[in-house]
Image (cartoon, rainbow, N blue to C red; front, side, top):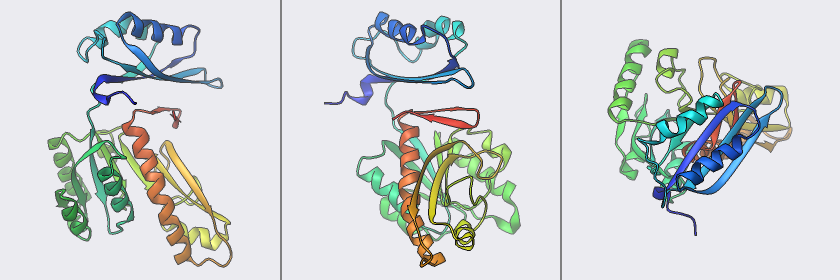
Length: 288
């Protein structure tokens, strides 16, 4: 049986590669009564970087979220680590931003209801009112925040106020077809996930299925990534592809692509909420 999430901790580490890091982590956890449940690591030999994810049982552990930083600090400083730890297994609070297309929203809500995504969804927000019935059926507050007279800064300010009031941990763009400003992005670095309907870096920007059709490709894809200031260029979390042929119209590509978009976005969100992603060099290390 899997351990109760509320009695486990997860530690993510990134640092220059060196001997003894794994031993230092395991020794530290053992010293404080934590039972190591799972450990995965990766070394980027080209850039000399080391990455690690450790999950540990807290049943007999004397560490708490308050005491962990002070106790861990000597090891972290010795190895020049950037790190993140999460203790209680509290579901992350996720805001979903949507446009007019419902397929990704339906999928996320279904997976949430089925227990596949350990998240809380306190609100769904859109610049259109089209998908309100889906949110109401799920019993989730829906906020319509249109872009009035093209004034995107004013609309983004409303979004920031909403998300900060709700203490949002993660923002998911479930086919929210708007570019976010750098000011907005700096509030949630590596905490805004987008689904793009192509296999990036191919066919970035608008109408990628039409671009793919015009190019006569034999596969199409979907890409989920963290959002950065450069359009469709953020660190890639998950991707998938499906074969297409000369017989397929643009509508066929869109139909096949919607299936990919749903599953790829869900995989990316799941990896994030399970603390399985580390970002470096505009790339991700995603532990299984």
